[in-house]
Amino acid sequence: MPAVTDDHLITTFGRLAEAYSRLEQRLGPAMEAHTGLPHAWFEVLIRLARSPEGQLTMGALAEEIALTTGGVTRLVDRMQKAGYVERRRCPDDRRVSYTGITDSGREILDRTTPEHARNLREVFASFSERDLAALDELLDRIRHTAHAAT
Amino acid sequence: MPAVTDDHLITTFGRLAEAYSRLEQRLGPAMEAHTGLPHAWFEVLIRLARSPEGQLTMGALAEEIALTTGGVTRLVDRMQKAGYVERRRCPDDRRVSYTGITDSGREILDRTTPEHARNLREVFASFSERDLAALDELLDRIRHTAHAAT
DNA sequence: TCGCAACAACTGACCAATCAAATACTGCCG
DNA sequence: CGGCAGTATTTGATTGGTCAGTTGTTGCGA
Image (cartoon, rainbow over all chains, first blue to last red; front, side):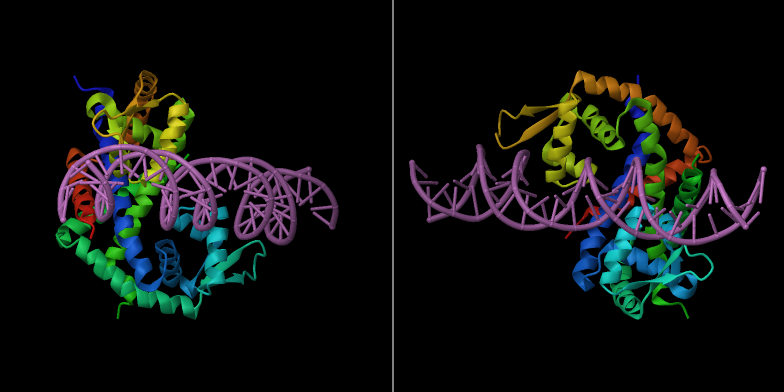
């Protein structure tokens, strides 16, 4: 007679939360100790670096890192003060503001990435290529089905 | 010539973060709308309900839900004020304080769980039993390897 | 072309977490 | 036995986020 609290998916969700925050707890401090870059900032920089022109609108950035636009405004403020990003105006639409990565941003990103990748490889050492591919695929499906919000 | 920013695991980590926060964004508000229970409270209650005597020490609870003990103290304060949990003293060690689920806590948990499970099933509708088993196994491995902190 | 609804970014008020230090207690070692 | 290092929890100060509402801009429909 399983209690209602035994639903398997609830546990799966709990596992997802735990896997994520343990990873964050393990890798975040390491990154910050290494180059002084908070992990959240790294996530912003890598997304900017991967975008055309090295820039993204505030809204798009908010979408990518799963923050509200208000949160992104403040995050970008701080990173701008540190010199890693700059705001660029959009010539076509004066409402939108781009956040672009600066040279200094690319520089610290390049300096941080190898160590971060090394740490990740250490955590995922026991995972085969097949495991990783399966994980990517499953996470991607969650990402998409969960995103189709009302 | 892949840039250093192309490391695959970095993307996987990003996917994990995104999958988690999208799920949270999708399910959290739904739960709160349904019974007024914030998702974080639900996570506390379900863990207490699953523990022997329906209780856990502050430290153990912090460990389970990946918060600092300071954070847990305040979270439990709020939940206690709402009547869902109570503090119980430990007879053997006066430093430790148990958080125990109350009848009111069990009641709202039971009232919240079916809807939450239903929503989860909706998100995971396209996942086969095999998919879910694989996901569980992979997440569990991350959870464990990431946990072995220095 | 004017008016207005929709939209992007930003801001003030607030909230919940963190960090570090304090408090309270335990149990071991000399 | 007495002191002290270690442990569990709480607390004060701070940070980084959300929410709701504002500002400035766009583009569409009458």
